[in-house]
Length: 215
Image (cartoon, rainbow, N blue to C red; front, side):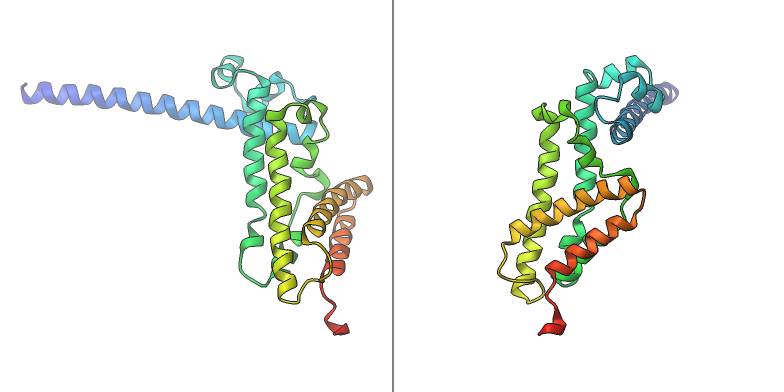
């Protein structure tokens, strides 16, 4: 093969590979936009109120693109719910971070949240179609179960270090704290007032922490 022919072949191969990579990147971008748009719409409208057309319009993708990547609304919703579950799970990483058990518990309960928009996971469990579909419900179950387990571990550690009240079951208290958070979203939204959420969280902390002044 002459040098010029070799260069021509290399140029053609490189150009073809670049076009393939570009198409692959565009496909990945479209898939990601569809998932992100579905996440937002599920948060805003719930599963029942989210239509394929609304997803396509929000994502700027056509019907063909949607059905190229997903078999339908339920399949896309599963992908969106799984991503939301991963993001919410990451948000509790402070429970495994630095600081004493009580400091980590405070960091988790006091972290910034879009209170008046409501909980992304809590919003979904209000949908009958979601809780009735094991594939849609399971990621939500995993989020709540994981949160209870993580909170219970910190509470147990706090009891051992004398920062958290003893004589109570850590798993029961963890379930209570998770329920306080979910209920606080509802109360704050009903009042249109984020301070209601803060009051609920601070009240829960006061019940859980050891009162050093009484020691």
